[in-house]
Image 1 (cartoon, one colour):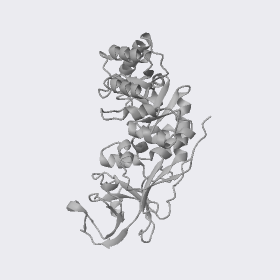
Image 2 (image 1 turned 90 degrees about the vertical axis):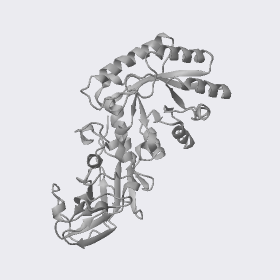
Image 3 (image 1 turned 30 degrees about the horizontal axis):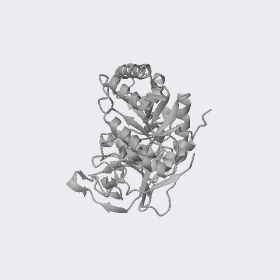
Length: 397
């Protein structure tokens, strides 16, 4: 049974001028909810890219405590960092170059994705260590990025199983990745799943005794039970974000885990006609008060996201003028809040908490609003928040 989780307003950590507050309880509960949808399939929590900007090691620990069976990393270096942090669950890394440290990966019991060319490098590492490697063969079912082509698949399977017979590796899995699962109406997902089943059959008919077959990402986990196979790989969903346009996190039973906030750094009263920020693309239309928000594109805020929402003292204001490297401006006057229903709280906003996005518990802005302002997706907004913004952690698994 999944325990319901109610989002709450996140309190700032004293002494931090700007911060991304990561709610590990939300992550844990998102995982429990998603696991309930896929059982008996096992669950991989994807923590690549510093856990989508949330902090790889704290998130990985919370994920494992919440029941994640596997961890997923793009690069071997990420997987090695998980091992260095003491995480002993199975870890898969799948994106390599000839300079990747396959020897370290094999030595630290990291499962490796293999699309073809990597096989000889992995075998060489296993030989040097006199320790068998674990690989997951990747078939390109239509995404056109990594993965072996269907034409070359039988040869790759045969070569891998030959090395397995020599005791140099274990073909532990076969996997692929979906291209349009976030658009559930599209037929290409059916086509990819059919190709995946064919590739698995080729491997199994050749003698592969697979531990895991996996292709489902977050959107397929949520909408395509026929894609779950032995394991699902969930990234965006564990952070409480929706992969579907027009569908909120709340509709999916998920709670966003990141709250990005700072403090208003300056307030000043200005006359009508006051230009704001580089290019002077915005000018005040009446006497008003401008508030300075000390976050900018060096902190990962998209430069083009003018109009993005900032919540101050219970009122949401749009960013006006061009977003700069370190700062942006909000117009605190009523004429700038068209479409925002809240009335401002009287008094100066200097030093007040300014929330760019969070879990929406108090009606505050969500990351999707920033994605819309920037013409991008929620994945990019959270992942690009830079290390200049300290992460602080609340809750637990």
